[in-house]
Length: 408
Image (cartoon, rainbow, N blue to C red; front, side, top):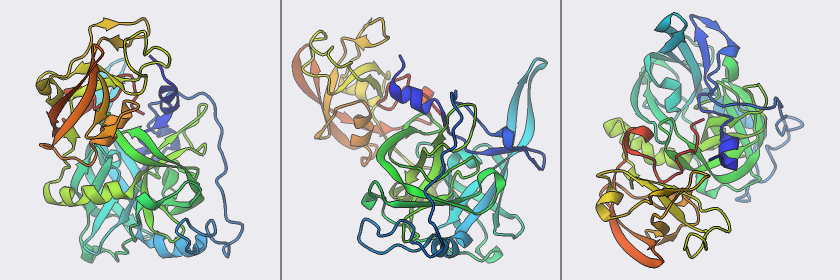
């Protein structure tokens, strides 16, 4: 089953990481797991001069700084991240491995040496270094990673570098059309600045472990491989997101004006747990669901096509223990019918499968959440005790999303 979202995100690069074999930067070594159809590089919205504000007045009414102001203010806090990784190699002569180097971006968040980046930048790394400006690489250690939000917290010895923490903003106050400025290391070109606007809000992308990241910011500021983990800034130079993924076109792996940033508020919630335990706990239901095709609700004996039709229930999971059920019959399109049709979770209306993950985003494992659903034409309610999300999608079924939703 292929949806428009599947077609869009099949071109998303989860890595945005430049792979280097040995010490040589090979720009064609970018991880690309999505099929592309058309190569178009869209120019980002640029300020006409250094004296022009980065988009004029922001949504809160305050006057924006110039792009030059923001770059001078924030670029010292943006770091180049280099991670030595072992790549699995499948050749005609058999399986093997070879050493490589993944590069990305990150930014300083405090004077204690804490640095935020993407989890996929340092995934599987045996040795990590960061560089501030033109300095030598400084050894960094991983305090924690959260594949579910694609975030990683690194730490350097605060005495080994001149730390310049960036100011964290409030991503809940961002509006479509607001200025957006990205600083990072695309293709290894360190501390590159690009500008644009916030193109859309409330996007959803898939994390490295195939679960859903909610409330994602879409921007047309040019983001390319190597920008991963860098800051997306507002007109005041405050961090509103962490650049993580791009959608591409054609056979190219670069920017076409569709980039995605994890909201900084998501990171704010994750950092304390990463500091304390090295991981983040996420609430988990243990089901996969699908959208009912428009116009098919009546034929399926459902009150509406607004909701989420249960496709599978993880054995022994929270939903199974509460009594939720999936159907047994499958249509020609692959939709499993006859299961429970969820319309409300935790008092929040469910219009599509993604709404379930959003409805429990603020909950913790162990919380009890009422779930309203239709079964056989009758409205029922059960209470689910949320579990702790497994390490990845395959380990415990999907987190309230259609199984065919692709990993970029």
